[in-house]
Length: 442
Ligand code: ADP
Ligand code: ZN
Image (tube, rainbow, N blue to C red; front, top):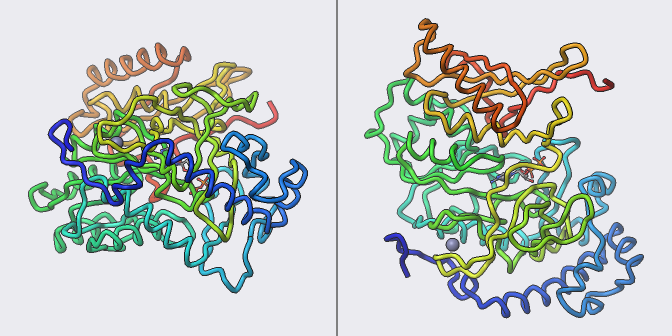
């Protein structure tokens, strides 16, 4: 099948194009099994028991999912270290932990079957973007406890690509690897990809000396403008990759070649969008908090996990023919929201404005300070390589243009500071774009 001149390829066509009714039937069977696994953990024995669920057979239909209580990050932390382990420890092959972006990290365990299923989901994502065994894959993301490195490594090997386990950092070495081994596909955070592009220019690496075609970018929110920027600067296709350690890691939802939302692999996960205040389900198309149940992990089953990530389900079918529903690009977490002088602002709104301006460079920082009783928002931006820092007039005009556009978007009047390219801090993992210096008790 083809659309927009694309030749779609499927890792498991039967599963990826399964009719909705069959997906739901499969989900129900797997949900029952997942409940049985969950009932072997101390945490769910108590929680599910209270909800009157004593066995998977108590789940009569998919609508019974709502009888299962939510699980929160807080619960996972309380259950540390073995409260969510459902099998004897001797059968566990590996553990992973979240990055700890919002507090203490949480741990998940995997047995051999879990690792196998996870790798298969990641392979499905990679293959669906048109990659084949002829590709050379440079995995520029953190290995270690973080799930991103190992998850993609295993998935790419399964597709049969040549995998370069470079990890992040040291851009000079990254360029050498790209040139020496003819890397065609990268995996990194979007912020690191932007940094790579800036460094490439700085080090005078000619685009013709590398054979890049694609990149998978995820682990942190980014806007459509940022995607387009990376694609335009590096002349590659960028695919959005979503995952979280509680649901194995990468391979939960991924863009196909249509790049119109992320297919949630519904044979492995059940997704719901809820109103984070009322906890009631929201209809397709409405934005809310994504809740995920893992149907593909025996060693640490996690059901109805409140991800805190904000998204929505698209209702129309995708041109690629896959039947698994698509999630809209995740714009941030419910707890990312900044309250600035009483106004709610998401960092993603600021990113959308600044990354859409070609005079702005590849990095920015949001700083919050207290000015007497008032909050002050400072947006620090690197300028693009074509802007001269010693030419005051155009610089002032640019500063004013950014200030005005931001104010129109978020209704707050920010102070805009322009700085030289390459001067703001770069993170090898998830970018830290917000510095909130306001005293906590005010
Ligand atoms: P932590 O919760 O400590 O950051 P993880 O390393 O498991 O732990 O990261 C998962 C989180 O990263 C997700 O819940 C989400 O907030 C964010 N994330 C991952 N991929 C994306 C993406 N493509 N777009 C937006 N956010 C993402
Ligand atoms: Zn699709």
